[in-house]
Image (tube, rainbow, N blue to C red):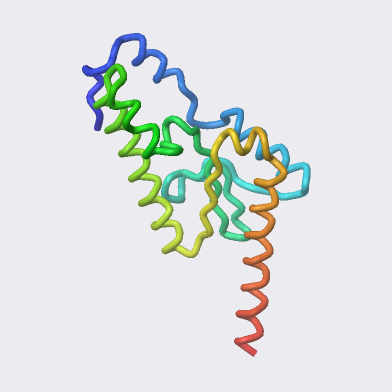
Length: 153
């Protein structure tokens, strides 16, 4: 667990207010999926990592990741963070988040789930492209299912 003694009181208060469920990026993606007729579960606690959106019918787990806390372009961002206020804290925190994301992806894959991760800005700016990625995964699952049924005959 991280110790908060290394961060300022204001930073601590700000971080406590951050939402982990029903963020704007999750809502954008969920609304579009719903509009297209896809039904899903939100934040399924039965699965590792508590995916933001779960298409149980197809065993697809979707995560909507914020660029900062999940370390987008980490190799570029990390040196800048190291030089900033409380750099050690932020580098450890984000590195740990990235490690946890990786472990979660592996656990879900081992369980037979397809894992899809989207960056928040991609969801906001390219929602249709994100939906296309999800629909391709659904198509792949359907085709794989048909193939497996044919092998059983």
